[in-house]
Length: 166
Length: 147
Image (cartoon, rainbow over all chains, first blue to last red; front, side, top):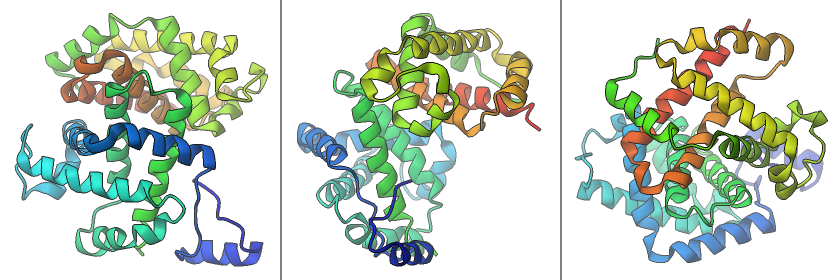
């Protein structure tokens, strides 16, 4: 999924084994640039796309709805839109902290692990639907290289989000 | 066994009828090799896979991609019996090619993403859901004969 920056092979390995946040997975400069450029283009519309990604996730992978029994999940729901904006804000936070995702996302990780208790497999489903959404809206930009950078970025976010679990 | 409703079958065939199998095949396989580079392990004899543009322009990738998508097309004609439709290919990929079935799931998801980019507005959440069901069914059918 990514390699730990070497702090000295022994230290890095020990940290990787313990799953400690000291082990940083860092995207390449090219990947970071690609993700930042896309985010500048998305501008204030990130929430629109994360909301669509959530809608797609609920329709394509109905088991994900089990975490939202308390919300109105019908298409166009204001509650889904509000949740979509929360996801957007979290991803924008991630984009602004690409060098230190585990630390930037540690509060969210704790929340999802201990309070919400979301099985991390679901993050991958939402990530996939976000890629589908972005491909649908930005086909001209969605080159193989950008797809690779985004896929890697999302897998790093997912890894950071799951890092508090146990 | 996967059961597709009438609406799901229509959603799939409406999209498929407009797919250029040759172009899309190269696109799907190429992107799989770019986004998930470890999948290149099965294509040692394909020549230059050293960069994204090399992969996407590689004639062997295009040819093999076309083969893969043509099989998909056959599956779409047999949506009620995917396991039967893919039995022989499943055996081949296990016994001769030694491909981890997880890669079929990756390929399926890449395909969904490409369909989204080609079909835009038409690729609604419901249409996507039908396709997710199909690619999951195909991946399972491809893994079914593994032992």
